Length: 266
Length: 229
Image 1 (cartoon, rainbow over the protein chains, first blue to last red):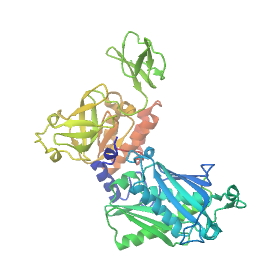
Image 2 (image 1 turned 45 degrees about the vertical axis):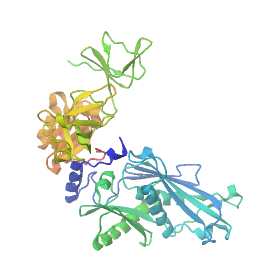
Image 3 (image 1 turned 90 degrees about the vertical axis):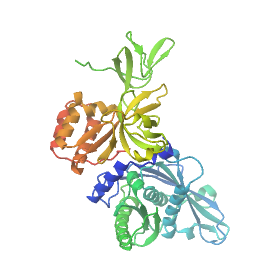
Image 4 (image 1 turned 180 degrees about the horizontal axis):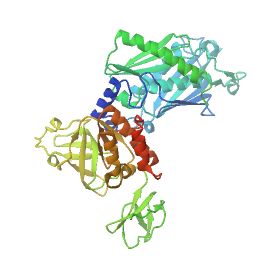
């Protein structure tokens, strides 16, 4: 099936989802502020410096971290470099096509990047080898393996877990002993979709297809908001946003305690 | 009485028993081999292999449920869960459609019941709606199951589907392509979806009918996790 036909939303399904939502129920049986089942496998790729496979319902994302030496940016001579990339491979969904990253992939990478960067999760100052000349560059590569909605949360969760378990391969570059990547904060990302006047957490593909606005919020362990991204053409009211932030902080706690810091991941 | 049907494996040499080779059989060096995992059946002089899993293989005369994915001046393009999209021409509908007026009758995203008028060698399909009962579907919910499970959901002479309809007081239409339309109250839709998922999971275990009855009378609800259409 082509990209075009797969993205056609059945009117019957649209009405059904809205009818269910108006009764406080969702198409896969969750309540409004529930995540789908999450499964995390740490260090999935042995040859990467850090990695994590995240399954969020039927969405599957693989994150790999590679750390190398390189020159710092001229305006930040005394910090390391973080670079995030996302790849929407055609095997993940009939609507993904091969070729250079499109709008979706760029947005995904930027939202994940912003969550990590603005929460100051990585202690980039400690990644300097020689000021202005040589620093550690951290590459976070997100590969989407299966797309069933909400790539943001799956990718952001995978990224912070992969980073937390990363080792800086100093010995490989003749820079002394290997050391764990210094992580100071644990940002958690939550995405909401607005369907009609209902807002749901962790939208699946059906919900994402009929949503008219989307809000992604990243919070850290102190309940501080690190990043917000609004998507699609619809709107949110002020109260909706404030309420969504509350839910986001709560759900962020769950993600952080269970998967990022907890032992619930293999 | 129906015999237990034999399961055959891909690459297995098969005895045609005087029949002509049908679906799922290929001939090499004068010998017949099985193409995919399935069960052996004989129908009007042809030996066919019915696959145990896989996408819907369109057959002439099947009634299917499809989703309109494109409109053209004199036909619609319908996704029927088959290898190719299927066109429906305005002449094969019960309506009198002027050239270019297709959008007035069916739109992108609409769901219809249609019949397969013809299938060619490469499985390209033409649809028709010119028959009583073939129509646009409105309301309710649509779920997708494996097309190979459709006979089990319908049951012998429609016994299973009758149980589902009677016990939940809902309207159900099962397309041969594995797409099922259910209409009724939200509660009854959820019950039917749960029962259908049970049938899908446990179709091979004896006593299915009783378990389905049991499930429905317990008033259990199950939401749809993998319903893709």
